[in-house]
Image (tube, rainbow, N blue to C red):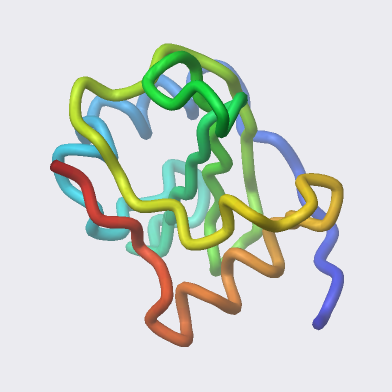
Length: 111
């Protein structure tokens, strides 16, 4: 797995990205506010898998320029699949998620 140098989006870039709508409503790739490619992807998991529906940790990244962000927040109002729920959280990396997206394991299913 190739390690990429990741740079975080600025606050303004994140705002531009999220104006495109919540990922749980539409799992399609988004347009990156930095490079302009339609290659922004998202993965989220429950922060406490024993209590789903509580809070989530989300990873969002551009598969082209490798800008990224991670954040915690309220869980979406619909259930979602988490194919990596049983993996050690310390092993989860954006490169891993990107590889799984290319293999068709991601994006997740919501609703």
